[in-house]
Image 1 (spheres, one colour):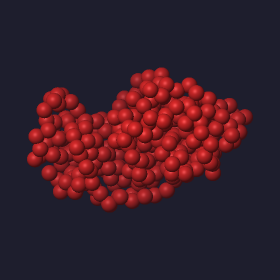
Image 2 (cartoon, helix red, strand yellow):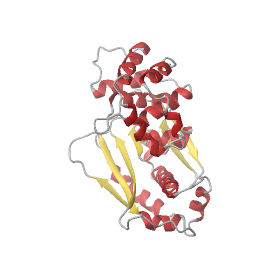
Image 3 (tube, rainbow, N blue to C red):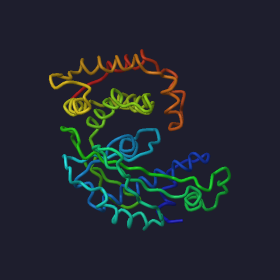
Image 4 (spheres, rainbow, N blue to C red):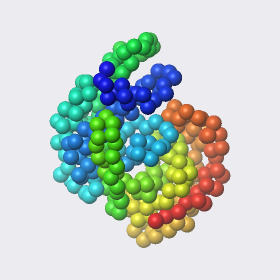
Length: 288
């Protein structure tokens, strides 16, 4: 096993196969971030979303994808430009993954790609001393997807952070108020197969627990871009609270809990989820 990967695995307390798969995915995510950083990607783009919140701000749930946004609109942006350096960096850790760009089936502001490799092969690479392959299909794959918004809403604010592993690197990412704005937008606007993602609600609670404030101007731009509000809308703090209150009344909380349970350790924290719970904690919301 690669020595750096072995060192990174020591940060995880794995109890079962599911934990091992998540540890593999997270380590691969950090290797991708390192590779993109080496390729100069963060001169033009910023990291945001659930994985950014987990890696850099301590969110206590697993997150599947890597989400990025350009810092300014650039219709000429090409994600594939960064693939050669990214591929070289990933391969340097003994990971012979395939990097593929996702071809668009319809016009959108998102460019996507993913790394894919056989799950059994990677379990053998990460856990060579353990017998853990039973019950895994020979065709099962581990996939790391990353997406870039090339037409980002305005008024996001950014900060730089550093990581030491897998090798020292720098990341440009949304600051907490801008991340929180993106999460509130997701709670209000994003549906998954016509249902809300419970993961968005879980993250919303996390932000309020951390006493995070919301980047109001960026949130307004996101809501405008989605067509959720009209240009004459002010989006005051009370306006946002009212929008959220209405949304909380429409959620199927059984389904929402079911969505997030595989990504967290302590599912008992979800027992209080109901419209009244979310409306009460929303009274703590503040904006900058």
